Image 1 (tube, rainbow, N blue to C red):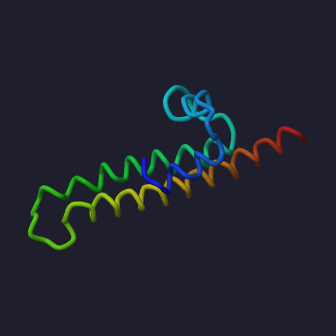
Image 2: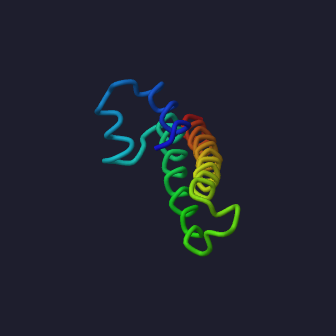
Image 3: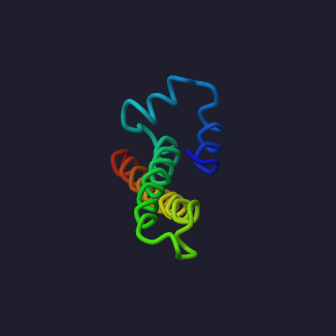
Length: 101
């Protein structure tokens, strides 16, 4: 995980190994906070993986040097994860308010 995905998780979960394991390794996220931490982190990892695909095509191009593709992919995946987690948090809160009425 990169710094921009590790820092928010470290601020929220601290040194609680059970929370880290629950969110990132074992089960799906439970609340809005878990979604806001988990989805951007997964998005950054998946984005970095997709960003590494064009690298073996041609190393002579300026944009295909080693960290550039992976970094852009991780940033794009992180942003997509942030948008998805925000949408899920809004949807989850809206559904919770509808059930309470």
